[in-house]
Amino acid sequence: AQSVTQLGSHVSVSEGALVLLRCNYSSSVPPYLFWYVQYPNQGLQLLLKYTSAATLVKGINGFEAEFKKSETSFHLTKPSAHMSDAAEYFCAVSEGFGNEKLTFGTGTRLTIIP
Amino acid sequence: NAGVTQTPKFRILKIGQSMTLQCTQDMNHNYMYWYRQDPGMGLKLIYYSVGAGITDKGEVPNGYNVSRSTTEDFPLRLELAAPSQTSVYFCASSYGRDRGTEAFFGQGTRLTVV
Image (cartoon, rainbow over the protein chains, first blue to last red):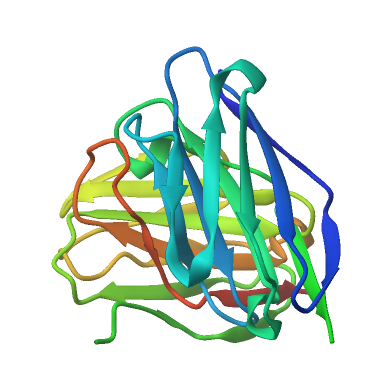
């Protein structure tokens, strides 16, 4: 069975500092991995995804994530935080076809300190 | 572009009442999903549909019903509302079932059962 663990339900960083949001997964097959972002009072929006091509994946708004099989990790990073990055971030894993096979993590709320 | 539209945005229900959460999408997506989001719990799949006339249970279907009479609409029905159904509900759609297919989310319905 697949699962996702997001370490840290709340992360605060200063504006301009590195953003690092952690995601570890468990999967019995080569996984597809996703990061979704939820801005206040909005639905989720796809940030980036790993689909077994390049292990370093670039997404929207300057975010990127690296798939590390040996560490079963898919951490999300951004070199320089912006106030507009304040949101909740969800990591998700899929072992099968269709979004009904998605398993979401519990989310990390990112706060940006001016 | 409207994308996925959910109504209402907020609702307070009394225990035992019923209601229908509306979801419509204008992207001609065959696949649609209902999730609930609880604090610290991530998103859980309630029901999904792979096309008009076809629905199936997700991880947490008890207390809910769905129908899919058209490609555009996927309403979620709550019968005999209970406090445990207090949550934020998200409808989503996707164009395919390939691994890695992006899900498009509505803005959510915040439901409180008192």
